[in-house]
Image (cartoon, rainbow, N blue to C red; front, side, top):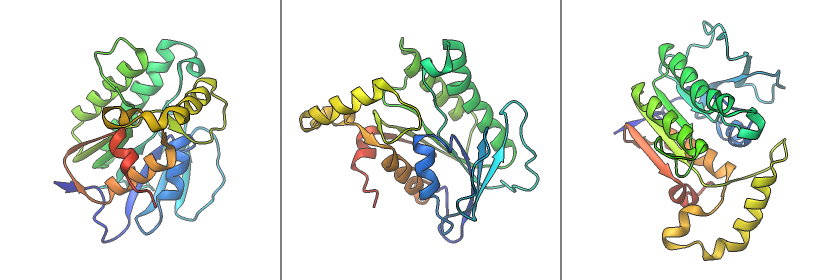
Length: 228
């Protein structure tokens, strides 16, 4: 059993995907009492909202100079993700949802990051015929192979929250999920939509308490987690 953050003093955090649905929620959850400093990699400049949050611009092709970041013993929060439509092609989708995830984790581990928390998906499986689930499953496998001291994998169902871009499929899925939510109980509980903020809260909680070297949170477990 190991803990990502000891709770005795703030740990260093590195966030990728910090402007997405879960990543934006993480910004509010990674308080300076738990993580300070927090380094966030981004393609576009971002406003400095809190003193302990530090945005680092990168194109993710050449890695930024990390000499001032001191990531030794730190924690990686990876919330990277896109859709096939936004990516433009299956190859471009895999390049981001698998390859960029793994390459970033590899870079972070080489800089001394010891722990990783990754937002995957309910049903992730490297043998799946469905591109999205197969890609997430392959990313999980490769992250496991990197040998972090601790790897926490979050597998949420449909994510709820306010995105910058409009996703019709998710809006329809959320509306349908709300209608059938009362019927999703017992073995069907894992299919209930889950709020992005709840996923972020579960990630921070997992990062701040002891757990196994490979810790997988299925959607049902995330849904039952008290985020307040």
